[in-house]
Amino acid sequence: MHMPGDLGRSAIIRNMQPLADDDIVAVVDELFLPLVHYYEQRFRSTGRETGDIRESARIR
Figure 1 (cartoon, one colour):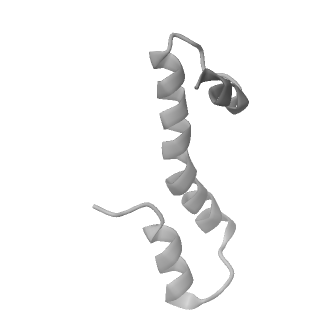
Figure 2 (cartoon, one colour):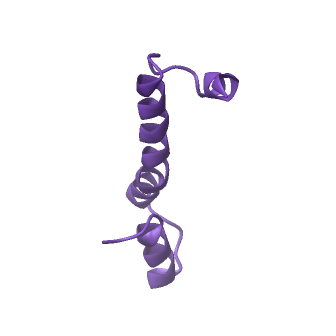
């Protein structure tokens, strides 16, 4: 099992070159998609449809 960010760290450490577009997309997917899924699940559990992330601040 890998931890979030492993792909990005290994790509940077491996060659110390700027990341290719595919690597950037993979890192963003790995780091931010779990956060997006968390907020989507949170909205579903409160009976709301997925909305603007700014709405989540008002829910609290």
